[in-house]
View 1 (cartoon, rainbow, N blue to C red):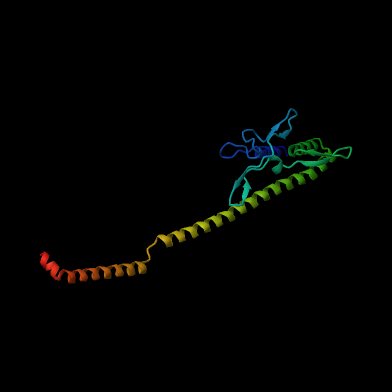
View 2: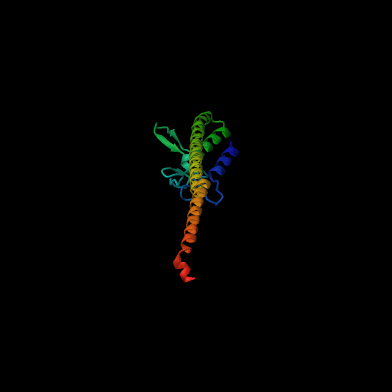
Length: 194
């Protein structure tokens, strides 16, 4: 369980190819989760979601906050009030229950572990949905690009039938001009000028 918890903490502090922490909100230069003085990881990012436009009227988030992906759970306190408990605190409490053979802590931890898994699954589903939006928008952009290239090609490409017709008209005009010049050149004025 401890190894699983450490692996989850490592995933929570994952960096992208630019060295930015994925789950820290807009505080991308510091780890999303850091251990406090008691050794419990707490979220130190913010709730800012950065979006990127993928279409004229569509944008999708390019990050997830740590509390979106590693969702805290609501725990009933001994006096019946609901208290928010962080993702890693729940795992630490379950590990302590297992190590100390404390049945109530283990039962509570297993129930809360289901809530943690559901939160991670929902965050993963949101990412999958956003990837589908990107794929659909990519298809729309590719179709639009193809349509624009086809239109440009029809404008730029030569229409051979029209070009031949225009060339024949110009040749006919040239022949008529040459024939007219031949007749005009035989007139007396031209003879006089010669």
